Amino acid sequence: MSKRRPSPQPPALTAEILSHRKGFEAFVLEHSDPWHREHLGRLFVRWRTWNGEHFESRLEPPYLLLAEPGFSRAYGACGELSGFGGRSQIRIRPSLVIGSHPHIEPEERFAEGRRRFVDDVLLHEMIHQWQFEVLGDAEPAYHGHGPIFRDMANVIGGVLGLSAVRDCKRRGTGASLPSCSQWPHCVRPAGHYLGAYRRGVSAGGDVGSLERFAARFLRCRLEQTDQDTAVAEVRQAVEAAIEQTLARCEVIV
Ligand SMILES: [Zn+2]
Image (cartoon, rainbow, N blue to C red; front, side):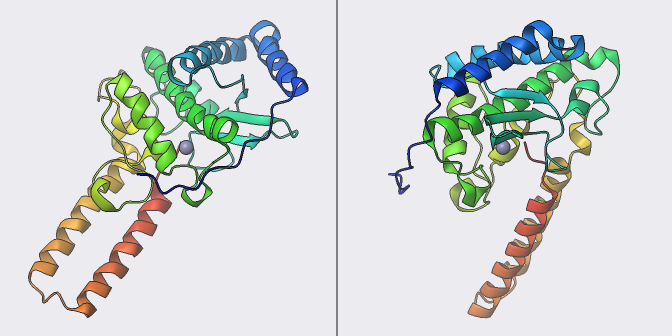
């Protein structure tokens, strides 16, 4: 049984807000620069499909931009407020589309894989939009990637045939699962991005190896030592330090 407190109602989307956002989508589809029209046009089609398939059509078109997120290690971001004070701005890093991002292959033969990767960034950000606009609960204590995000990711993931993820805090029975802060990229099958995603160079891969090594080391040490209070405290402190370091290294979406 969830112990969450009821969320406050999200601010209403007025007729002016909805009109402006629909007008923005129409401009992108009909009048934007060809490169933007190609990629944002596809993303708006994806957005509308997924809004129906996964969100009961409860979302309204966002301000969808190919623009750098504020956080340097993020592939994308969904802001509750846009840069001009509108509501729900989704930014996706252009280097992922172009192929100049260090995690992405640049050659033309990887174009379809890049599109799949970028589409997945949008799907991730749509859950944040749903948190802001439908639930009114962005889970700030989890930087957006808490139990609400996790559960929605796992519902959608179940439809897509993806394995489960945990919330961003590594603890409890789900501690060994990947974090929803990198969903769905972290649970897509290896071939899904057709080789466009350099999974091996991502911080997530490296950090995962480090985490497993550190956990194994700690277990070995503790098995050789009395489980007194001092040892437990040291273990707690070390694990907290590892957790913080891993959190700083993680790529997020
Ligand atoms: Zn996120």
